[in-house]
Image (cartoon, rainbow, N blue to C red):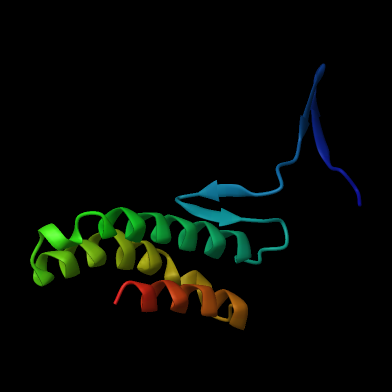
Amino acid sequence: MVVLSLTLRNDVIPVAEAVRVLGVVITPDLWLDKHVTAVSAKCFLQLWQLRRVHQLLENASVATLVHAFVTSLVDYCNCLLAGATKPSMDKLQHVMNAGV
């Protein structure tokens, strides 16, 4: 594997394995697997936190919170996922099923 770097005068700057642009994790191969993994992790964290308070709220309020904190994360920049691999889409589907 070739390690790329950028040299500016005396400083050597290694190329990052992935970058975050407007909340989307992009890798050099342009596959969005790391982005999907990051989104699903954030969503499950939000669902775990909502689980702690859901019995104190009405069902409509819980649904609103799930939509605000989970569905919006999955929906953000989802047009980039056109043509994504089945395992990536399955991860996101698992998140959506958990939010129901």
